[in-house]
Image 1 (cartoon, chains in turn purple, red):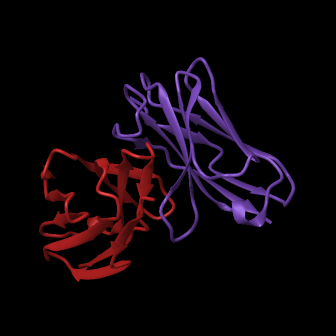
Image 2 (image 1 turned 60 degrees about the vertical axis):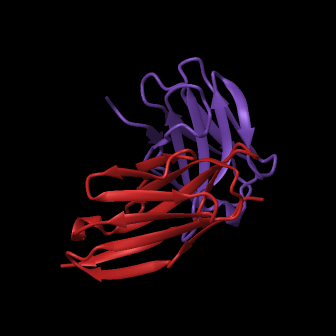
Length: 115
Length: 112
């Protein structure tokens, strides 16, 4: 089975622009979570979606939004990009109940650079 | 507020050595604790998950322990190999916040 996939792999944007990152979970996984990882730090939780509903939100501004589609894939949108948004954005999927306590399977990430 | 700390930030050992990575958390109300491996510029690979009711988990050369009362977890790597070189992250699922909180990671280098 294919693992979690993310697109694009790399992205360069300028301040003030908008970006959309995409994630496809492992087949059969209904929960998708998004994390931001700044260089040298651990990932920070942004959102969790389960069965197309938001189940959790981290301490990120309203410029960050996400959604989950009927096929359980997900998009993370970031508006009005700031230099500080430069990071590796990770998507993770999990198998069953949608609790973040389930084993998380991570994708390779999208490296976003804001100039 | 749950905080997860990993010390040291970096570790370099010769091949074949047994080693221990440390993870501490401030809130003992955790549901479970997970250890992940991350290769440079890559995503995370789940290594072990320990439920709060468990004391340890083993997978191959890896053994993770959990002591909720002291707020500590350790990842033991036996007979280290150069292929073990990576960043190791621990993450605690907080029962209070319902969120997975990561440490900053320990970057391990195993020299041939």
